[in-house]
Image 1 (cartoon, rainbow, N blue to C red):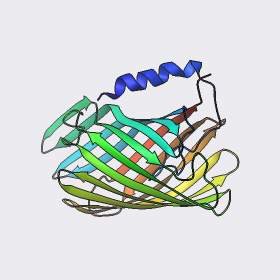
Image 2 (cartoon, rainbow, N blue to C red):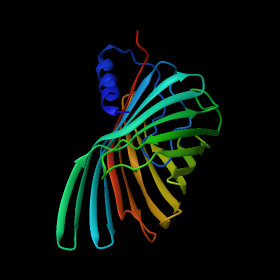
Image 3 (cartoon, rainbow, N blue to C red):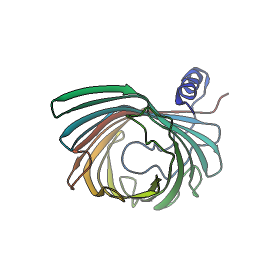
Length: 256
């Protein structure tokens, strides 16, 4: 499965579609929105790119990833998602050597279920996401095997300014499980700004425990687009020392 044709098709459709009521975007932060897109609508969420810095076994790796997510409303409480990264760059230094690689990552398909429908009612809402990631990426940027993921996001909104979410997820890869638990606390400022803080606790069956902490901001452009920026820093024993990124999200409505 190749993300390039699907992404190109979504972009070619944009001049002919009519905008509908905007949904919540899955970017930024841990987890995903607890609502789904209305039937027949599309959203594109694009990283520009994500940066990771990690030192391991005497090597310093810097990775840049332009991750893409296409969301399609299928009707009712269900949404289809297609994800991947058509461009990645790796810079590796250590032990007197230096190399770089450029390529594409694995492709994923997912289904989201949000029982509240297209709009979350009340102070509490939740959604679940099942995902399969196919091992079709280049060697430096892929998992090397098919990965299965199952996650849920639970969200509390005591008022229209504050929200708290808890994201829980398990990834199954090559017979090993990786567990993630990530609370997030966000607040809106004015009509367009939102800021949040986040902590990611990760347990990998092979590598042990990892802890990241940080936060980000999002800025609404009108009713159907959003810019975001975020950064996480390692405060545990292993994993990337820095993760940071910029992103852009846009919602397209139903075709006339």
